[in-house]
Length: 400
Image 1 (tube, helix red, strand yellow):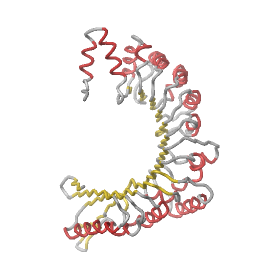
Image 2: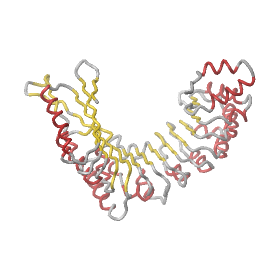
Image 3: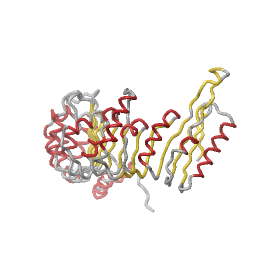
Image 4: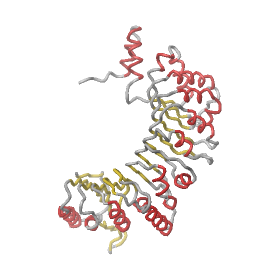
């Protein structure tokens, strides 16, 4: 068993002699879970001053680096520090993870940074986000020049009107294994107009996917070998007709092109229903609550995917009682109704049940009876159950 030495203690030991100082630098810089993170010009300046004391030696221990260019800070006097920072990066030959927030102005003012990043061959993970409203051409040129085989790429919220995720994907299309896009509203339409294929991608995460643009064929053709798909709708202004039309198109498309199977499929009910996946899914997860009104969509998804493992969150709703609006009653989560929809070859079921508002002992006992009836599922081997009860004026109570 090894003990963790506090950072403050290490810093004190480093001041006692040169040998411990060198060892301390290595210990602090290579801790696996540490992220060197900057948000202010002062932090950049301090870091550069320290690193340039022995830039080649100290830079070689950098593993994870992230810079947030806070748009509310004054960076106008930091150009020289940034040039020093570029020198540090050139020597960071073991840097594995690199993250940027609001990098566009920085790339314009300090072209040395583009050259430094492009020269590295060790970066496997990148995270890019931006609130800038300028064009992303400089960021595109940076990734296109990069020599690192990036395997994990996260494209966060990027507000530029000219932003497209495709140049970032294309730059690493032969090495990417995990891709997360936080603004995926138009990704399917953009993929249709390109010939991008990412053959090694295993995990695809799409946030903000508009249901009426959720074209499954474009995703299958661009990412033919994924095993894990996470798809979420952040806003939903589409009509039922829009979603039904896209689902019908997706079902037809999969008659000619489809993934063989998926290990994990996760998302909200609306998005998963619109995608209309027909391949076999081992683990199906609903990341949002399923209510009674969602059950028709829920049933369609289950029947298409035929999962072996199902994770679902069920919630009841408060409704006015005959005694008036000040005496709400709880409609029970639809445990009994989903039982008849679950495939007969389901092996594992994980249920999270939330009870909000008022409920009677009678209704709670009825819920327990419904849960007990799940034992009639002959194929079921594992049942995971969590019940969360929130009573007025009290904290959330959980039963597992």
